Length: 442
Image (cartoon, rainbow, N blue to C red; front, side, top):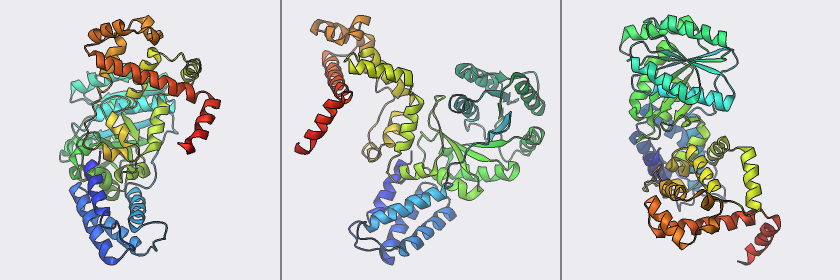
């Protein structure tokens, strides 16, 4: 996500590195490179020009303190302006009404139905809501089936009427069912439509008028770049939507849509999709995204993702086992599953300051844990519970059973032993204090 843009901005900042002061000449040269980087990322030309003009004006108006360099000052200004460009603050969903009605609109193939499932899952697991999904795409039978499959997968009911060809009636009936069954959020998945198809645009306007939604979310494929922004403008003129959802931000996207859309349509980005899994949905935080674009990481989002997979009771039990040095391969396997649920591995690494740049040319497969999982799954229940039982002959058997070699099994056993030692020390306050006291002498 935004790797090319981050690289080019980093190169642009190098113009100011080693400079003792900010001057019109070095700022102009830097802004020229930044504008070029933004245009290469498919940012709207007017947006790119206004942005660099604003940064230039503010940079020339700043006094550089002796404690910071011109490059550091410009990074700070860029961070502030990028945050403002993408909306300034996080835009929350309006969820006070019961039921809250959310209408989903967008082009064919933008990922509306998948997003509808993700949003329902988010509202159920993160907001404690009781959603109902409404299958209101009367033109694509597979969309109804897809939504029903997603609903079953995440344990959320779906209202559908495959016999009806009236999207207004389906939407109204879905809302009536929600009221009857006590669902406090109704998410209506509408058919994909082209902005040039007048009949389809009129139809969604009529659905909007009939159900009077509290939120209208426009779903757009981030990989379409500037076309996404142009399409959003046309849809906004007709629907006056309340927010934008950018899907497929985990793909080969240049980032232009995320950087341009707020300035062009004056509507906030509310969510971003970062994968196919139902958990791969993030609330859009402009300040955090600006930090990631500038290669400064996003530790807050990383912690939040970890907390979503965090079970207090399970963690307390694990803590007890670590103190008694009883941490075993069952616990290790469980921790791997929690990490996997947090999302795409390369995306997670990109949230750690400095790591994103180091990893830009490294392919990190989502199957990175497969070898470890295979080795653990080839152990007997007793071996998993008591790793000390695993002698050389058992290691050979595990290697054959997991389709790996003995070196990989030995490597995992050593890493596991080292991890257990560190965990044991960290759970012992006296040992930790002793370690801290020794650190300055090291």
